[in-house]
Image (cartoon, rainbow, N blue to C red):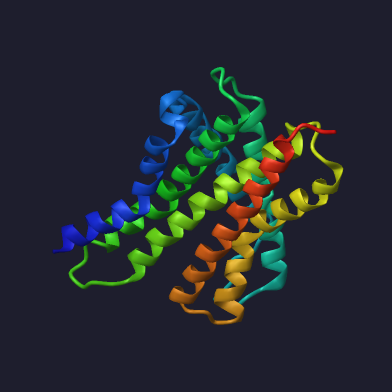
Length: 228
């Protein structure tokens, strides 16, 4: 029963990444190399973030919401934006379109995040003797994170790679990037300051990820139109 619970949670956490790759043109264009490179960049970016967190933040004795700490975390979170930009522009890719490139990078970024932060807790906790919903929520969070990272990669590609985008959309693109980059601090505020329980937090993450995906898709589609 415990192994069955672990397998269910593992499929919920990592399965959507595999399904997304297989069900989209990413598999047809063999973009796995781009995703693997994005994983490497993610690991290096995370290392830089951890060094910054250790340098500029102090260890808190309580689990309460600290505005200064969260603002610093939000600023450090923009390193992800720089990392995705680097993955999109500085790495050599196969001759694939911008659409496939940002999807491959976003997918690799999300998969690496799930493995780094969710695999070990899942392996240790989900095989316990007592059933818990925590790892079900963790899997749902991974799904929301996948959508958010794909949206962030799409918006970063629009920020710097799409030169002829309508000027009226530029502030919206930047605002969406800021919202996505600061999402961990927003979630922390909901948990620590407002006392939201996991079901409510996960519901917010799922809804916000779908909203950001819709907005990102609309912006990307609008920027693909030829300028008049």
